[in-house]
Structure formats: C-alpha cells, structure tokens
Amino acid sequence: MKNVFTLQRFNDAQTMRSVVFFLLILLSYSCFRAEGGKGGENTNGETKPPVLEFTRLTHHFGDVSQGEKVACRFTYRNAGGNDLVIHSAVASCGCTVPSFSREPLPPGGEESMEVVFDTAGRSGKQVKTIYVRSNSSNNPVVLTIHANVVLK
Image (cartoon, rainbow, N blue to C red; front, top):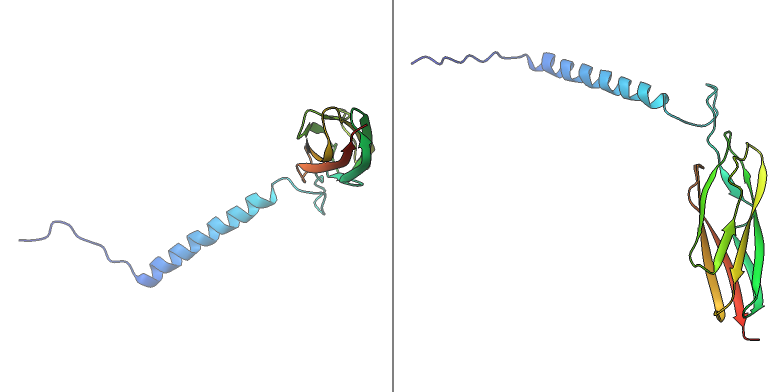
C-alpha cells in the first residue's frame, strides 16, 4: 500500500534563514513603530509632555487649636513642554479641602494650590494626604499636611 500523502523536505539551512529573515523584518517594523510614539522634545522636534513639579510636598502646621481652620499653599510649576492641566486634587479626608486653578498652565508657568484643614472634631497628631492628578508624566503627585490639634 502506497502512502497517498507526500511530505516535501525542506533544507534546514534554508528554513532557518527564512525564519531569521522574518524575525529581522518584524523587529525592524517594531522599532520603526516605537519611534513614532509620543515623547519629549528631542532632536526630531517632538514636544515634551507636561511635568508637574511642586516646590515642596509636605507642610507642617505645628500645634493648632481644635476647631480652627488653617490653610497653606503648595506652589507648583510646569517643567514640561506642553500645557499642564490638573484634573483633580482629592484629599484623604473631608476635613481637608484643596483648591486649584483648572486653567491650563503653559510650559514654565507657576501657580499654587491652597489646602484648608478644618480641625473641628479632631485631636492629636493628624496627617492628611492630597492626591493630585494631572496630564503630567509623573502622575499622581501626593501632598501631605501634618498638624497637632490641641484642645482649647
């Protein structure tokens, strides 16, 4: 009985060359596509993404009387090459309220965010965090306030 199926034998060296050639083409295509992605201002003239930089990330109020509202400002700047837009600033507690400009901040521009802490109903050492989300490449940025709330 004859085998009705015939198998064609490939030269192993020829097959290996074909596979290597295919992989090189695939790798070249991948590298070409990767260069077309978004990036910073470089020799090709592409634009840098915005970068949110705060002058400090922590504020210490020290001793504060219970029931008092205290405020501080966190200054920030856009160290990138495109407009910076802060989308949200969310505090870890309802007793802490951040306020910020929703207007785009141009490259090199500077602005500040006010944070108000209401000590009503609080006592002792307090640590609150504010999560700042933006279109920046370093996202989110975490700000922290500290206070020691003392009874009147």
